[in-house]
Structure formats: C-alpha cells, structure tokens
Amino acid sequence: GESVGLHLPTLSVQEGDNSIINCAYSNSASDYFIWYKQESGKGPQFIIDIRSNMDKRQGQRVTVLLNKTVKHLSLQIAATQPGDSAVYFCAETNSGGGADGLTFGKGTHLIIQP
Amino acid sequence: GAGVSQSPRYKVAKRGQDVALRCDPISGHVSLFWYQQALGQGPEFLTYFQNEAQLDKSGLPSDRFFAERPEGSVSTLKIQRTQQEDSAVYLCASSPDSLVYGYTFGSGTRLTVV
Image (cartoon, rainbow over all chains, first blue to last red; front, side, top):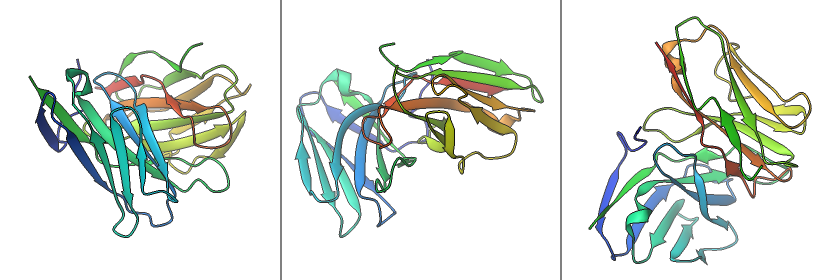
C-alpha cells in the first residue's frame, strides 16, 4: 500500500515505551489545536484536541501539552503499542466566528519496534 | 452512513483529462471540507461548504478546480484539464455544525495523473 511517511521525520520507539511527538505551530492567533493519526491508505483520525485556554489535556494513553509562549505542541503516547504505528499530524485553527480550514503541520512517522 | 465515504478510491487520469471526485458526508452534517494531501505532506485546505453554500474556496489552487454541493449533502470536486502536479490524495471531511469541532475525514481518493 501507499506510504504517507515518505520524507517525514521519523520517531522509532520500543513497544511499551512512551513516545513524545513535537509540533511547532506558526499562527499566534490559533486557539484550537488537534492531533490526528493517519495510517497508510486512510484519512486522518482524531486523537485529542486542546483549546488555547488550557496547557494540558489527557485522554486514554495520550496527553497533549500546549506552550503558547513558544508556539509548541506535543503529543505524549504512553506504553506504545504496535497499533500506534502511523503518521501523526498536529493541526491548528482560529475557531472564532465559525468553521475554518485546519492548517496541518508536516507530520511525524512513528515506528514501533517489537 | 456511519462515516464519510469517498469515491472512487483510486483514479488514474491522463494529463488533460477532466475528473470528478465524490464525497458522501455523514448524514445530517452541515459542514463539508475538501483537502489535498501530496505524498509525504500534511493535508492542505481547499474549500468549505456550509450546507449548499460554498463559504470559502481560498485554497483551490487554480480555476481548474471546482467544487459543488448542490443539495447540501453529497459534494463533488471537479478538476479540469488535469496536470501532473494535481496528483495527490483528495480528502473530504464533514462536521455536524458550523464549527470545526467534530471533524470526520474520509479515506480519500488517490488521484494519479500520468
């Protein structure tokens, strides 16, 4: 099948370890951020989101951290599993006033080593 | 349907040919978005509909690209006189209201122009 991981930064971790994926965003007006997981041949799948009035949000095995001062977002995945292998994208938008297109980052290819 | 459905799944077009890509959003979803994803890149916003109204088409790369959603449900992205640089995965997403929250992506149509 096709690979969406070509030419992307790659993070390789051992199964069971924690993963941290980083993202720098560009628009200081962005107030809503989303992490997506994209497996080969599929569309992006929502993982977790965070609004700019928060600096941390936790989900099931995932945590998103937001540092507005340096415009940095990170996704932490605890106890990574083989099914976590995918490309991960951060996305940002200014959500005020209705729907806008999302601006996606470049993506990171996460590889889980057995 | 249960998810966003896109067809065809794959399309090979000869340079200069016109193509039409279809998106069936989740039933009842008000907002519909089209994105273009080049190999190894994140998705890039093309256009946005709220019901049948095309509210933003700022991302369409040229006047060869045209999108419609005449009855506020199914949408078609048409590309005229395809060129090699149009080769990409075209993703459709829908959302239940006018806000960006709750986006669901389809699996995309992979267009290859030869």
